[in-house]
Amino acid sequence: MLSLRAKDIMTRDVVTVKKGASINQALMIMSQHNVSGVPVVDVDNNLQGIITESDVLLKGQFTPAEKSSKPNGIFGPSPDGIDEAYRRARASTVEEAMTTKVLVFAEESLVVDIARAMIEHAVNRVPIVQRSQVVGIVSRRDVVRAMARAANGTQSDDEVRVGKLIEL
Image 1 (cartoon, rainbow, N blue to C red):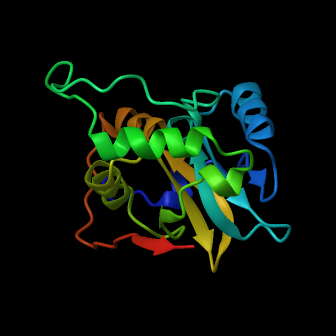
Image 2: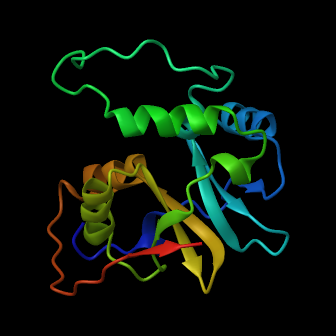
């Protein structure tokens, strides 16, 4: 597992949504392909952002429910997070709802670094880019599959490569 690279585990046939698409189109694409998020790309397949279930979860709910003074359970939502979710709920296009700070990696990036970054940045998937074009995607599920395959073997690699968080 330690020597695996993004290119070894990434999905190459990436489901994407085009810039300018409606939220409803993005919902249909995610639903039809059974994915929880998709990169938003322009006509040349250049990454513009990413839209996920979290970005559209409150679609159609335009007014926040009455806010409680104490959070429900240990992991209560932050007020800023709820306000942002309602702002995105009013979006009609993917550009209005998508995240533009996207963690990206290259094909040669180490899977262990991708996994670490997923935890550090609380993301479930990272686009794999060449220049600014999407050439693949690695999800947490891809990493878990790689871990399962490597569980019976020993692999090591001391090289460390990090992804970068970019503003699109």
